[in-house]
Length: 258
Length: 206
Image (tube, rainbow over all chains, first blue to last red; front, side):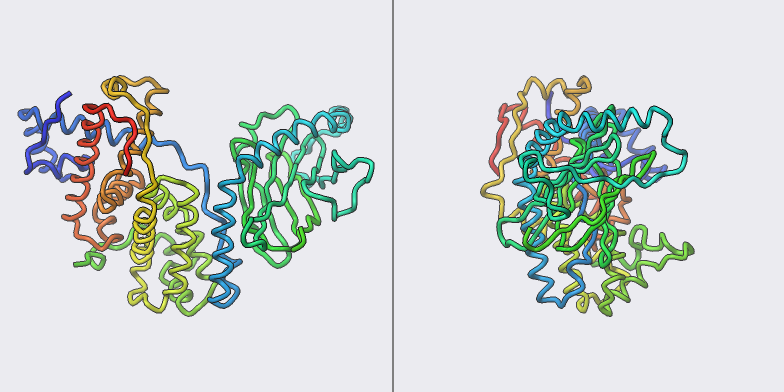
């Protein structure tokens, strides 16, 4: 292909969408392009470029849900907390992939372990306790850590990562800490549901709330993960909003020592 | 000369009559240090700022960071906002300055890498679905190589589908300047495209 330069007097109009032109401009430009091979080639190239610009992949990361954590304090303190948050986000970029891989592997192992429990629950559901038309709230229960079965569960203070189940749903949650500074925490989750593909789960809303904080919303991504970053130490309630019911993790305790 | 007085900011009165506070009300409250009002402004405008910044820097995580930085600077600098009706325009100015600063600081190490061959480029008009995705990625890399002032206009016009007068209002430019920038931006992308095609260079240091 040859790189024909357009006529200077028509160059600006060639770069605009048709709807941005007045009828007179549109007609004049069309007439000129019919007679000018250079402007015709330019217009064709521009249309291709614009089509490809518009067909770029959608953005998968979303902006953080809010600024409440920063603005409640004075400006100087805000700056410090803000710096922490930025570093947490930067840290998330570096750790998210390995954490996902870790959680994915963990979930596979956990599914094998939990399949007996889930199977019985599934059979129970199939036996007649079907989901009602109204959304139910199903409280998830904490499972013992795989590597520490002999030690049992230490109540709500169980070590991270934690695994919860509710009927056919399994939720692994992990608390990550930014390397520097050490006060910034992020909650990463991995959701699976028996007989449901990750693709189907993608976009499912997840709410995180505490008594003192606004409800924050994230969605399950294409790998089955959700991330809340940064979070502050508090007792949270986490809800996964499936179309047929809400799975709730209550009393999700995050302490500064975690 | 700013044309923001002639051209209202896009969506500036979208909440009129809805019972929700307008942007102007929220801006006035936020300027008086009402953090709840500022949170609401963040909820309304963070996504569009995020898309703009991500396309400006070509990285979603950096776009996320810069979005937060934009709002934080706005919160700190509210006393400097003389015209509350120009809040969005002011916010975009902060965002574009941050994007340009980021680019300047990372210029020496940023690589725009793409392993397309000239043969692939020649097939640009006959791409199948997979090649179409690759070509879209390539074209978006081209976008990162044009001047920031052209790039921001191209993003707003072709990706955020704003009109020329809306872009002019947001960026404090005349509509004529926006038209010129759109033209020069596309022309620059086209020139780079042909340059890659002729040299066969797949990886260029910025």
